[in-house]
Length: 243
Image 1 (spheres, rainbow, N blue to C red):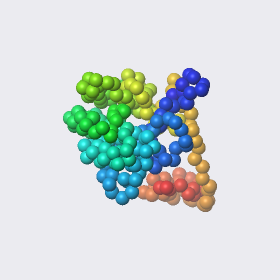
Image 2 (image 1 turned 180 degrees about the vertical axis):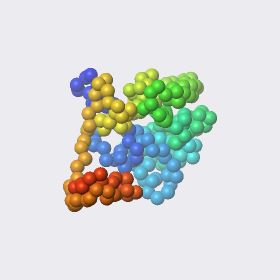
Image 3 (image 1 turned 30 degrees about the vertical axis):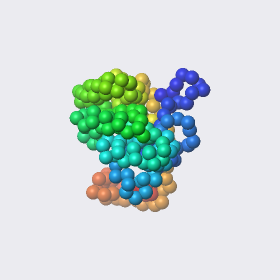
Image 4 (image 1 turned 90 degrees about the vertical axis):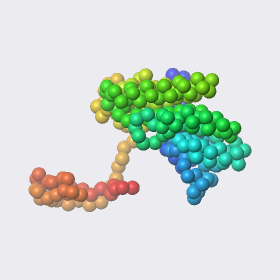
């Protein structure tokens, strides 16, 4: 969200999926967090990418003890301290360390002088649904786990949970940082725009028409015949596919 101070940037930090995306960002002094967790980093070119991220001061996400140890070793070889983010699986059952494994992973990170824990997050399963009991339960689990972490460490660690849906529909989940995703493209997370959510599209997608034909009533178009002409119809072919 924009900050009142006109001299300040409109965001406080960047969060991207991959190291390659971080490298494509324009030059900025803002912090960068890479959300795809690090794993199997000694395969192929990943080691050099991890080194580049550490030297750049970007925050890496780790979800497993093995990734923790690997990043710590690479940071030592770079003579740098790597900043790390941990994601907790509170109910999406996709990525992240389990609630049960979270304290052990934090202890492992704290045991490496070459690592610095800077943030902890989670991701909601259905935050665009309102009201959603699961979102509130996920938030409860996350706060319970991270409150215990802060008490054990004796210092507060930055917490983030709110994606686009939670920003609008579960404001108590905003915590220290929010992570708008689909909303920054101008798309309402609930798919029902409201006057209290004045989102604006940030781009339009255009392509040339490379073919035109007229089809008769009853002629199917496309895979699985998902469109069937109800009348004589003029159609255009646009070169927009998987890529």
